[in-house]
Length: 370
Image 1 (cartoon, rainbow, N blue to C red):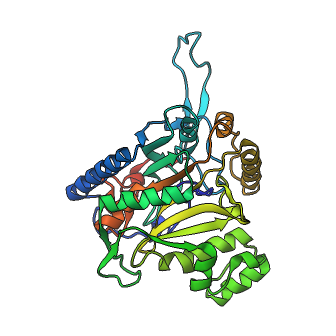
Image 2 (image 1 turned 60 degrees about the vertical axis):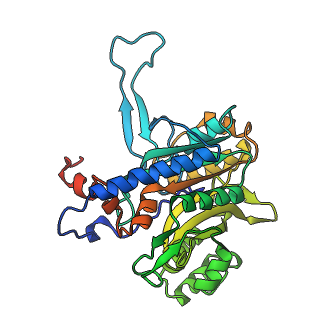
Image 3 (image 1 turned 120 degrees about the horizontal axis):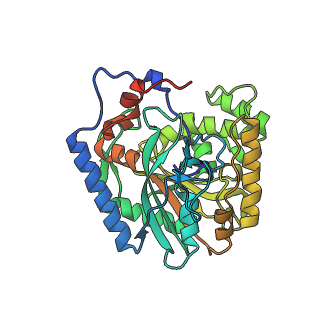
């Protein structure tokens, strides 16, 4: 979900090869009606709170720099004759992984201080029980704002959509309901690791982190970095325990896990980033926005270098996005996985159950790529 990364949420679950369906699994007409009702309630709630719905392009000239995201590629080729004021020559574009850059450009302009979008987004390679390469994000931004004000808005918005959700199988009780009544639980990453893994990661270097991970039953790779270890322990030990009776905001992520978020003034080791969980399912990723173009440029260059080391495409920086940051006051934003929220409210166990045409059913008949 947002990058969250910020690292957008780009984690993967079981590979597609582990999905075994006896029959077709696309959503039923009942789920389609539930999807429509949820979108309507979200729009009503946001507009009552003064948010303006916007649309931004899907095909964009600049992809995000998140190291572990792979955007789909496409090309614009103008048809002749080419008018003088038109675009000359073929241009490389990407299908956006999030509308974040464009929406922050709007946030800097007059009349868009509170804006939102239900956007179709695309992430190559993401296919699992909770991932589909094409999915829907609800992104919303507000200035003035912060992680705290966005969390408050979001929990009220979700409660207006539903008062509860069925408990998810394999998490906690596995029966009954998860209450969506505000306020949701707040738990810092340090508190969550101490509670569910038995140690505080911020006090450890990579070697000690690896030892602590093994002690709690996690088996990291021998060359795992500090951030790799953090993510692995989070996925295996922390996430499944979150949001059992009521949703949980996991807050204060390590600074290295939040490339687009503002650092906490009283403790710059952590960022004002949060993720929302219910029944062990990650639903949203947000933070206090970093609105300093100079610092943001430095962070994005670090991500470019990491992408280079990982053998991934390295994309140019979006200068229009960067220049907009200095015209934006304190701001907060969040990306909510709309399909996952629908999974939670309907009790669906896989994302395919809430999609009319899931990739796991559609992609196998596509022509093989060279």
